[in-house]
Length: 497
Image (tube, rainbow, N blue to C red; front, top):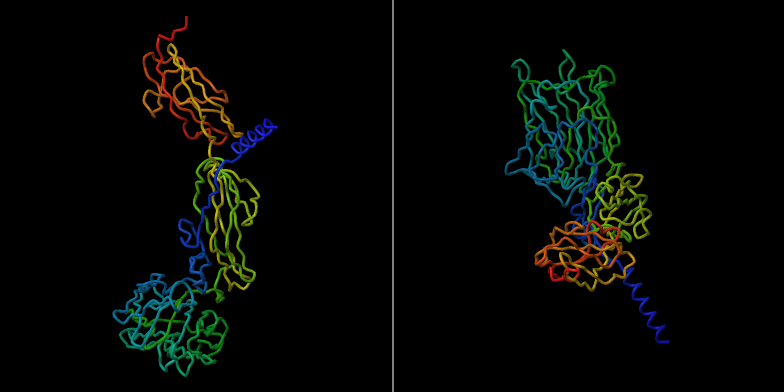
């Protein structure tokens, strides 16, 4: 009975030694580290309700789809024209970037009484001398605080005239009677016809402390001037001599002196995404997010050793409405194998559907908005749970026996089901295994599962040091830890007769 019990314990011990390969390790991305080291396209980092740093879709900031002539995102200071056609100045009374009140991007322009921006047009700007007969649009998001009478959203004035004859021109947008009033004075011209003033006003009173989108578009082919609020037409008229569709008047800037474009003079509130565009495509896309969504990819992740086992990939995310988050991974024992592998979709927390062992991996996440493109999913974090493949342990017992020009090594067998063989290291200094001279070759010597070896061709009288390690199918290129070091000195005294 005792013999059977002892045999059971030995078998159980060997089973545990043979099949416990490594410790579970967790590698987390996101939450507190803000997805550091993860490449992103179309995504931003946003604070979650619990203080985490989440991945969300980036706002669709520009709305007109045309060629930007002026673009103020107000995302950072100093405020600048990201289209590169206007020099933005403000001095001590310049508007400030506000991150607390914003409609798109990372910030908006905060204005209070006395603050303003001056924009000096370059020669290539739309509001410069010689402006042609192009379609254009002027648009912005506005959050008025007071709706004071006469608050200027923007104003452009020119008094240069042609041939030395002064002529006043104005393009402006001013709060009047709790609506926006757009004025184009002597701006749309018909050849050999005196200029006139064109005004277009909103119909519905504005609501203070509310974000609304405002835009005016001009269509050169028909002379249409259209005012839109939140993408819906509010008022329409025609820039023509008759005031009807047909022979259109065209925008023209008189004189060769560039005049500043003033924004926010006397205005109290916030402006965001202020833009002037050439040839807008006719569609005001005000949806917060792009239908193309966004993606994030990790760089190559080293799991520490070939043959490491990925147990699962966990994730925490939210997908409101019919928004969506998709997850993919790649896995391989070499970088070339990793690059050749296709992206494998997986469900977080579930068993991975494809290859589950390897040393290198990458993870990709794709985020898509809901059908109306008004809701973004949020990725809080994802965690790779894996076991690093540890090579089999070294032999627990090693002995060395000197001979004439040789040393014979013997060692205990390693009871590990993964074992593929042993590696013998030798050299003439403790811990330095760079030996040469053995008939089997220089150190290290890769052997099979045998438990002894004779190293011939060694120098008599020279002290040699030896150690062994074990390897499996994955660690052949990088064997495991060394055994205890032993030494032996070959001598003619051990010559066999």
